Image (cartoon, rainbow, N blue to C red; front, side, top):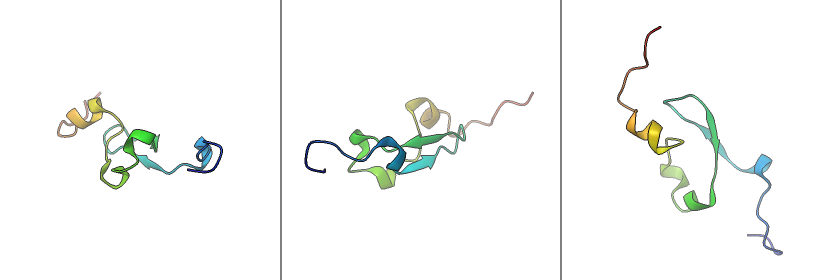
Length: 56
């Protein structure tokens, strides 16, 4: 962390795309130690990972 208690601004944080909902999500402090292992943006997407998308 930088002096003064501020980290990177949100625009400079790493991001990934969720394979379930196809939305980008950004790095969070709680994922600091496991960012390489984070795949899904939320618990909801993690639970839906094996389901097929609904056909219209």
